[in-house]
Image (cartoon, rainbow, N blue to C red; front, side, top):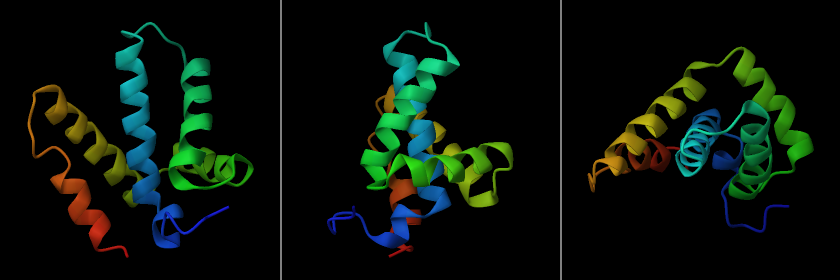
Length: 108
């Protein structure tokens, strides 16, 4: 599936998965003005994450389910950085993505 656009080190990285997971969730909730439910949120994530990470949902879903049940430190850090970036963007802070870029650069 990977056409060379996303390095394998990022496609399978728990930090990157946590970051995208939380960023998409935040964006969807904002777009829906909070009027959403977990089923809708799951559908959005099931459609967005495979595209962003260039992975099949059948391979990604079990990994994500495991991380949601027992998040490792990298997944937690990714979600925390996504929340921080989202808050900064909401306030117009142009440095919102510096933290995540610093972490991702060291991975490939």
